Image (cartoon, rainbow, N blue to C red):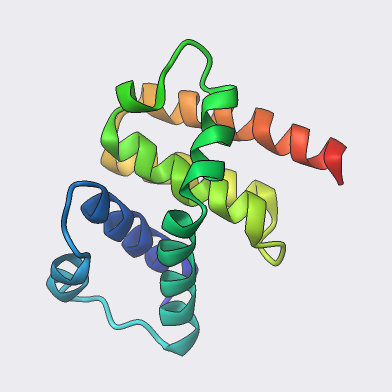
Amino acid sequence: MARSAAREAAMQLIYERMMGGSGEETLGGMIEFVPDQDDARYIETVTEGVFAALHDVDRRIGEFAQDWAIDRLARVDLAILRLATYELLHMDDIPPAVTINEAIELARKFSTEQSGAFINGVLGNLNRKLERER
């Protein structure tokens, strides 16, 4: 399975959990989804990691989502931002450009073109700050 499909599954699990579900319904409902061991580990790492580091992840998003409070963001956009922010903060093996590009593609598929530009701006600014901090 391609990492982009695993990333899409992770985003859907994050979204479902944000909406009060357990995530099991989403994963079970992905008819063509058969993750290999690496993809399953990635999905578990990011979905659990997002919620374990939620305060820091949301703080970082809020820092660059100018004039937008976290609770006012579209839920799909927030799920995408949480996934990508977690990757930027905690997954050094994934190039930041890949994380940002994949987040934009998820926004195009599940949200709007405008969301893609917004997500690009937030993540691009966050990435530049992280590069300065390293």
